[in-house]
Image (cartoon, rainbow, N blue to C red; front, side, top):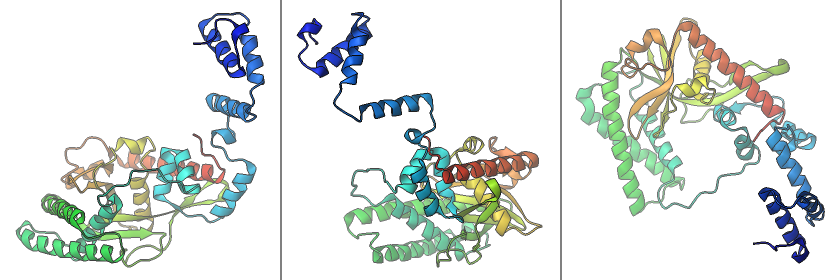
Length: 369
């Protein structure tokens, strides 16, 4: 592959490659010296900077080459965030999962490259599901649905779905045509399956019924939000006397008397309960804290929160008080995600401590790769 002798090498690049190959093969005692000469003579002036950067990454050095912002970039970030930044719960969850991805997406506003698809955008389908269910359940707020009324509920649900589709078309989110008609038919089947599952769940749960839908906190009021939404964000003490402030929107809160249950809709995948203890799933614990802070009276209590899959209806994940698991059909046989009162409180405090650290890291420009 390379010249047999260094005397026959005809270029600096070949000299470098042969020397490195000989080092790897344990040949030529003078190969290391030759390699150093070749590397020192490389014309790329940025080469050694890249070498030092990679060495730093491998050694775990905390510098600008390993996701730690320099002083100039940090000053720009501080100016952008301001003193009273309110972070979205989704953003903080992104940071917990991958700090550098948070930096790329949230600070640099970079997006993942994706193939153009002919079918409907998944976010549009998500909006369709959320808005349709919010409209339907708002018409039955606090009401226990009856299996005997399933046919009437289907007619209502279909009418609400059509109204949401019309709105999305007016906004240019949906383009009518054969592909959309196919997607629409699939979406309707999803919603019908959800209704069957919902009726079954409500008949088994001990008195819980949807009361708050698209309940927001720390967000500007919008027509699609629950009237009881809180203007203020979720707040708790941070580092150096600063306050951590978070905003978000809870898809659904069910109630039975003064007991509250939080649900977040997912199309398919529901994060397992174990991800909360690992600090990777912050959504449900932070929703619970927000409901406790803004919605639950002093005599009320949040007894759990989890995920509600729509395309293959089911409930799973989250965190639940063990003493109330039998009051909910989908929790009665679950083993993971159930906590004693002391364990519940300790987990919430641990989540708060993790979020405080995440927010402090963001403010200090710490985005390790």
